[in-house]
Image (cartoon, rainbow, N blue to C red; front, side, top):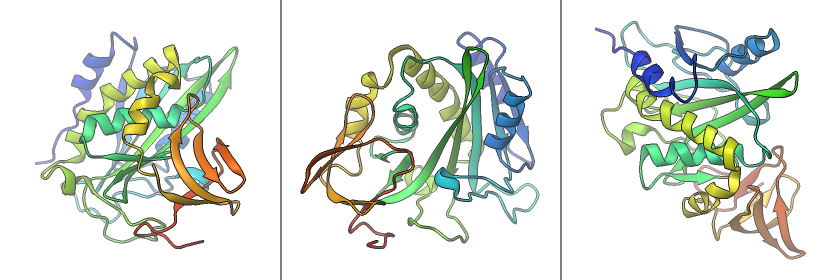
Length: 265
C-alpha cells in the first residue's frame, strides 16, 4: 500500500500563517518550480506547496538538470523528494533568502547537517539537497517560488559534480512523505520570518553550520582564498591575496579545493 502524503496536516499547520494555503501532489511534471512560475505569470498567486513524485525536467542553480524518481515502480519508495513552495513575498531586502531556507531545512533535519553557500545542504562533505529560488513580478509585489530537491535514498546513477549524500544515511527509514511532513511548515515559517526581518537574524545560525568555514576555496572566476562565513546580507566572505572579498552573485560557483567529489578547477 502506497504511503500517503501528509497534505491535510501541512494545510492545517500553515493556514493561520498563510490563509488559503494548499498542497498539491502530482505523479509527474516537468518541474515544480517551472509550473509555479507559469501559474504566477498567469495571475495565480495563491500560496501553495507543489510536490512532484517524478520530475522530467527539474532544474538546479545555473541551469543544471535535476531529475527525480526515474524508473520507480508503482508503490515503490521515492528516491528523492522534490517540491516547491510559492507565495507572495515582500521583504525589504531579498539578499540571503536561499541561505535562510537552508538554515530552516538543516534545523529540521539533523544537528550535524551543514550548509554550503549559497544553496546546498551537505552531509559529511557531500550534497544532500539543493535549493532553487525564482521570483515573478506582479503589480507592486513579487511572487517567490522556493524549490527543494533532496535525496531520500541513494541515487542510482547520475552525472554528479559533487558526490551525493542521502537522508537514509542521516535518519534511517525515512520516506519522502515523512520528510515533507518534517520540512513543509518550518520552511514556510522560515520564509515569513525572513520577510519580516531579513537575513540578519539567520546569519549566526548559518555560520554555525557553514561547511566552507576556514576552507581554501576557488571561485568560478579564478579567484582563490579562504572562506570566513557570511555577512549580514548573506555575502560569502573570502580572504584572498588581494584582501577581503564579498561574494554575492548567484552566478558565482564556489568550490573547496580538496573536498571529496570535486575537481581542482
